[in-house]
Image 1: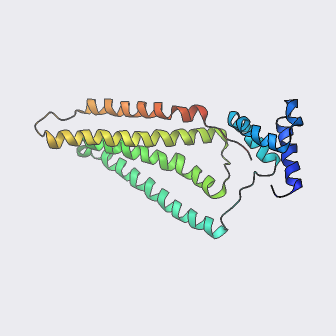
Image 2: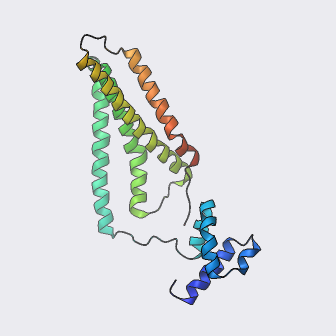
Image 3: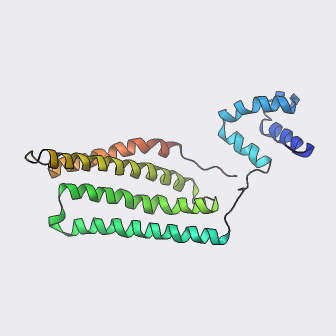
Length: 210
């Protein structure tokens, strides 16, 4: 704090935010600085209200229009390739009966997870990345975070399943291969485990206004 005005603003805002407890009004700046961190750790909303009161809610840096445009072009190309590529993989396997092998079923599942990530999580988070503003509401925030954790976990678990399938095919070529029934059960387990890991994001994700 470089001036008496800023110090007084800090004192006033602290007393306003913590006004429920009268003892805060009798403390000096040093005492406030000693006691405030413990209060901020207890309540995230307290930190946000204090920042807003002191005028610290604005983003310190915003990219120029050409920087935002460059990010938009790069990210749009990434999303386009992700959507088209994964959609093409899904169509090739589902449209051709001879492509419906156990390994390709795992590949389709991996493509579905990547497609969900690109469509449901990539675009909204790109807007927030560039503008530092989330105009989509709390429900979309929760869904976006849940989708991100769900699809990443599903992708990793699917790769594990593909690894096991390839291990059996290479190391034990005479061993009985995985059946479609076993593959479906493995994919069901993959999505259930992924949903369980992503559950905290569904329960605790929220938005805060600055």
